[in-house]
Length: 451
Image (cartoon, rainbow, N blue to C red; front, side, top):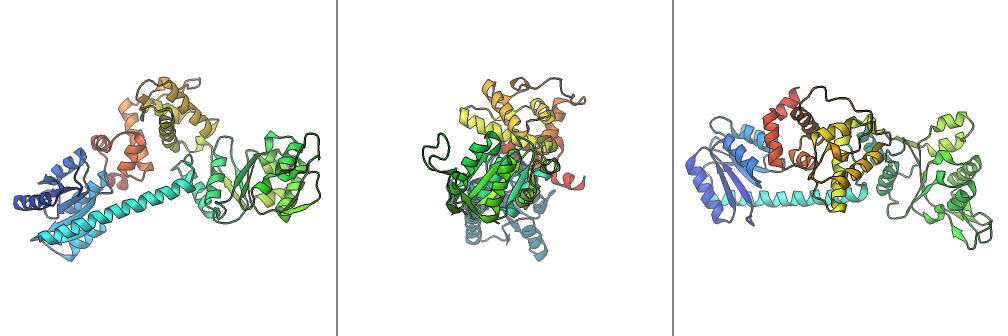
């Protein structure tokens, strides 16, 4: 590939095509030539281009419409419009549609060479900024927190809202919905992110051990206490304490915890020294705390102290449109860790995944994909690679395999905001293959907007 870049020149005048091609080849660019919109679309589907020079006035499809269709294939393509019919209206239309700049014929070689260089430099700056934003997002949001459904968008918005504050957060939802990942995202979005995130599973310990874990203990305070130990609240100094399965703690521990949340101070088990602690509290449970309050098993004052900001995580069956994204995410994750060249999930297998009950939610889906990756012998995960539970799932309603594939591809494309590059990545296919499939389906952005 040329160090300068790859340019696609589209003009129905032979002299213009020849002149531009000659100028830019001498400058060290890789050049592609097209004399019509249809030829340009073919060249675009066949190869990657950094920048397109488009004539606005051409026979058949004009440059304005061609620009829109090229951006459907590659939203990152830089476009510069050319015309011998200079007018403010066409310039404004081109720029509104995403063109980088606009030049009038007759073309000045020095001027257009300067504009192209500036446009490509701008493109590299934008790409670098995107890489930096993605790096920041990678740091501040756990990789497994995936979803484009309305339910998950509400969760992401809630994290963005409460994360930068110091408010106490209560996260509820079924087991396996990803509560710990949300806690990590909240901590990463807070000013406390450079301090520890300390987690404790409250339901896994007896009352005595839980108190010792939370508040620490002094040497000799009970049998086996051979040394002084700091508790989770001390270890999380300046950071976040995550109390998982808060609904499982005893009433006595609830009373002690309420005091810590109110006073921000603890006393170690077996000790009498009052220790000030600085932390943020995030709690999670899969139980109905309001029902536990009615049954006298949970203190209402502790509930109100914990429930300053509430995030409810949806079950996977309530956001089935996220299953393809999650499945592909886990496939890529395990392909890397297992060093396997598996990059696709068959439409039939994906239909089965979408229809599964997933009582274990995202955790169960992740385990299913991991098992499939272990047993798979081909570059594509198929139905037989998954262990689908009996009874048999509902049929496809008489749809053909191509219809199932079409529905899945269009769903992923919609979830990716109609960004074909991103959709192709999620689907595990190249952009050219996706473009040809969409063309066969008769898909267009205008069709989506008008449906």
